[in-house]
Structure formats: C-alpha cells, structure tokens
Image (cartoon, rainbow, N blue to C red; front, side, top):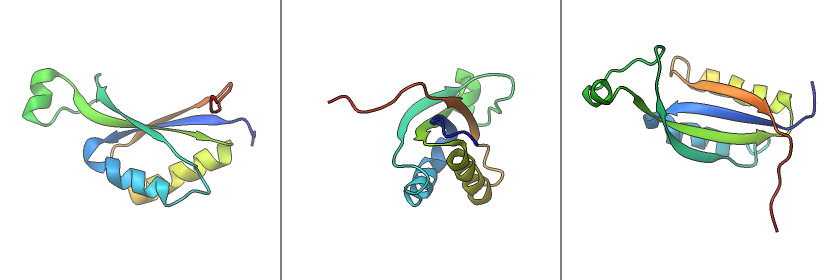
Length: 104
C-alpha cells in the first residue's frame, strides 16, 4: 500500500450525517478531522422518494471530506462504515492529494 495521502469523500444521507461524523470522531487513529458541506444528488441512480425530492429532482445529502495519510486508513474507514451503516446508501470516492497543510 502506498503512503501517499488520499482524500476520502463520503456522500451521506442527511439523516445519517451526525452518526457518521460521530463514528469518524470515535476513531482518531484513522482520521484527525474532516469537513462537511451540503450536497445535492442528481442522476439516474438517485432514488427520489420524498415529495419535495420529486418536485425539485434531487436529494439532499451531506458531503464529508477527510485526508487520510495512506490507503490502509481510507480502507479501514470504509470497512468501519460498511459494518456500522450496512444498506444505508453511502457513496464514496478516493483521490490522491498532491499537497495539503495549514497556511500560517
């Protein structure tokens, strides 16, 4: 496994945002923090259920982004979430991080 830092992005149903965040916060050995933003899901694979979703044509989601120090930690987070939130319709992607840090 490479030790290249990776950005793990999670797309989470709004009602699960706090539970997923609590799960991540309970495992500081896997991630030191994350950012969350609102997102809207569009596309043919999105299941619109609520009346408001049917009218506006998208679903409201939360996006959580965390930089993982390596692939093993990103995979460990995904395994943890698969177990804790089986069938919860979480979506993710992983991309390499060219650089990251704090501006002083």
